[in-house]
Amino acid sequence: MEKQKRTAISLMALTVLIDFTGFGLIIPLLPFWAEHFGANAFMVGMLSSLYALAQFLFTPLLGSLSDRYGRKPIILLSLVIEALSFALTALAGSLPVLLLARFIGGLGASNIGSAQAVVADVTAPKERARGMGIIGASIGLGFVVGPALGGVLAQQNQTLPFWIAAGVALLNMVLVLFLLPETRKRSSVKEEAQQRGINVLFSGWRTAVHYPLILSVVLVNLLYTVAFTGMESVFALFTQHEFGWGASQNAYVFTYIGVIVVIMQGGLVGQLVRRWRENVVMIGGMVCLALGLLVLAFSHQLALLLIALGILSIGDGAVSPLVSTLLSFATPSDVQGETQGFAQGIAGLGRVLGPLVAGGLYALGGPAIPFVVGGLLSLLAVLTASPSLAKIQRPA
Image (cartoon, rainbow, N blue to C red; front, side):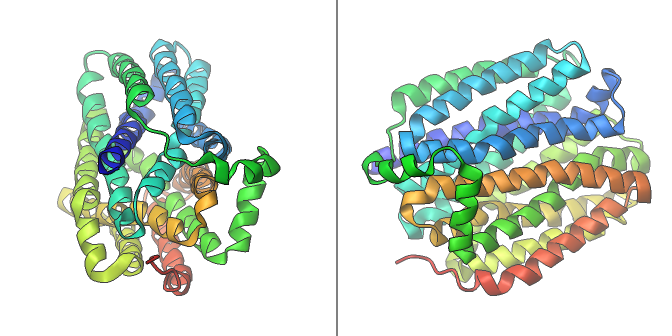
């Protein structure tokens, strides 16, 4: 059983790593790469929003289908879609094709809810923060590998990273096919899943309303996601304005962010949770995120910029896995996949709104305004979340 658990968590970590390597590869290069196809600032934001829109639409559906049919077939399907998306991105010769490729990529990346449900299936409550932390560390590692790979290889050949990512996705599919055990007990949820059908957004919302603590965590995650993805989407424009940076410099800075997130989620989060529990660490992470964004808004020197990014990266590294952990504590076992998928879908809505809001604020108010608003949103999340988070107890 212990070997099965390690195998399941390792394969899910690899799956999420591939998702976010592709996404991380895009972030620092996106504004400059999209301009190559004649995109304006609005269309640059649209590339990120379309990717997120697909996640918003399909993550809850795939999460619920994994409750009904099992985790493994849904994850396999998503990996095939990801490979096709990376290949289409490499072949894109126009902006419409690139937009389509990013939308398909978001559909393939909708497997994160299923991956987190696998972790919830195979871990005891007291181990769940560590398991979710490993998944979170894979996300952070994707933000290390992706920008670093993109920053180096894009100078030589812009399409090579995407072909590599497509090949790795197919390799991951083979590993999942032969090595991942099915972790979901279908018999306990089959009848209920048939009654729910595929109308997952509504059923997920009904579940959240029925369990107010779930709704609280989901809404806090929405505010956090809007703030962080808004920062990501306009950061390259900010550094171009303040420091005259291009794609390579931004790639290295995003790698710096990813390293901090990996350190946090690869070990520090688990240690912090053992000392202060999930609730306190979650609130502290949101405070760090808010502080980092507010400092970033007024970072006109490189040293201050790196300090601000370090603080907000610590916050992101703490918040991301603990959202899933606290959600799993508040969710009945027979709807873990649906609830995790619903939560990720709502976070996907945040990833749709974040770039659009930040881009509009950047155009209307200047480079600092998106970060100020993001910091205030994070503070709002802290104020609204604290009473509810205190009520969520780790199961015995």
